[in-house]
Amino acid sequence: MRPDDRYEKMLQAVALARNFLKQQVELGFDEVYAQPRGRKSSVKKLNTSVKTLIDLHQEIKDCKKCNLHQSRTNLVFGAGNQNAEVMFVGEAPGREEDLQGEPFVGRAGHLLDKILAAIKFSRNEVYIANILKCRPPENRDPLPDEVQMCEPHLLEQIRIIQPKIICALGRIAAQALLKTKAPLGQLRGKIHDYHGTKFLVTYHPAALLRYPQYKRPTWEDVKLLRRQYERLGTQ
Image (cartoon, rainbow, N blue to C red; front, side, top):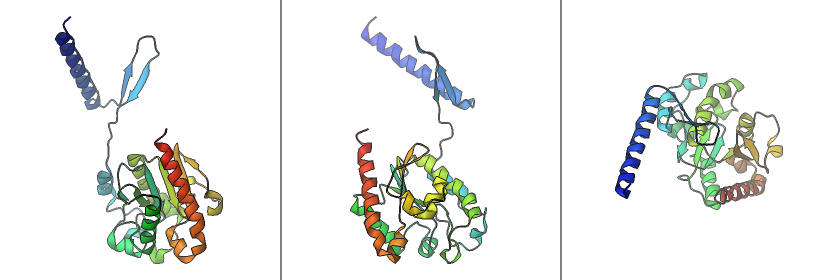
């Protein structure tokens, strides 16, 4: 067989395979079964429910699952790179975040920017979100039922972004995601496993503004995060 004939047959095979996969998706199937020679059957999933952060934002922008919607100015969805390998999660928006509709834009947000810069990150490289998307009155701690109602939105963000490292900022975010009541002091300084994703815990930037003595351990935490990030390139 001439090289040109083999190339033509290869193109035809690729076209047939593409049409087959397209038909399977249109018929509602999300699995393709293949039987390689000499091997057991293998299964490859087709992603038939692709959703972007924009899609999710549109779904929840008018959320009224809990009473916090009654006092919010803006739903604070999240911000950053949809393809980020590192994701930071706080507890809830504050006053400035509620007014601007962006996470971490107040004094704590400016400090977070400095922390990111110190470990060679920018907001455009990471993704930043909160457990709650609406500001609790007077910046009180989130109530258990508010976390229960809002956490699925965050989990969907994590599913879409698929970060390789998550860093919880503060006790509430750490306890909510790790499903623990352990104090922050016991959670920080180590690598946790969050459904197969590396998970770190450190102090919330707002706590650093009130208690400067937390800056040293926070610096140790974010250096650990940076080391874990750099190891991703060698794996």
